[in-house]
Image: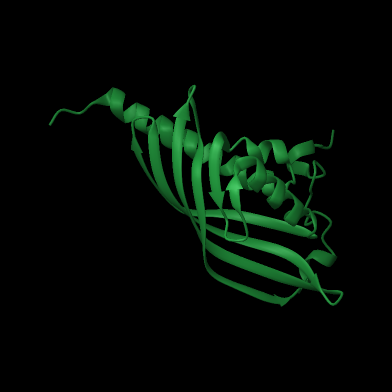
Length: 172
C-alpha cells in the first residue's frame, strides 16, 4: 500500500480544526462568550446535553444562562478520539468540568465528568459540530475549599473578557 501524503495532510488538518472547534466550545462556556461558544456549531446542529435537547442556538442560550448563574466554571478536554471520513467525522471527547455553585448560601464545588459523542461536518471549509450528545459518567458536589486562592491575586477566574488570557495586560 502506497503512502498518500495529501490524504494524511487533509486528515491532520481536519483533526486540528476539529480540536480548535472543541477549544472554542469550552472557552466560550468558561468566558461566557456566546458568540465564541456558538461558533463551534453549524447552523443546523442538534445538541442533547441531558437537561435540554434542541438546536445550537437553543443550546447556547440555555448553557450561557445556566453558566452565568454560577460564580465560575472551568471545562477541560480529556482524551479525544476522532475518525475523519471526507467532509464528515465522528468523535468521543472526554471532559472534566468544575462549577462554583451556592447551596443555602454556602459555596460548593460541583464537578462533572463525562463524554461528548459528536458528529462533525466540514461545510464551506469549516469543521464544526453537527450533532452532540453529552453523557455524564459521574458528578459530585463538595464544600468549597479555597485557602490557596485567598492570598494569590493571580488565581482569579475571569469571565466576560475580564481575564488576563483575554486582556493580555503585560507589565511594561
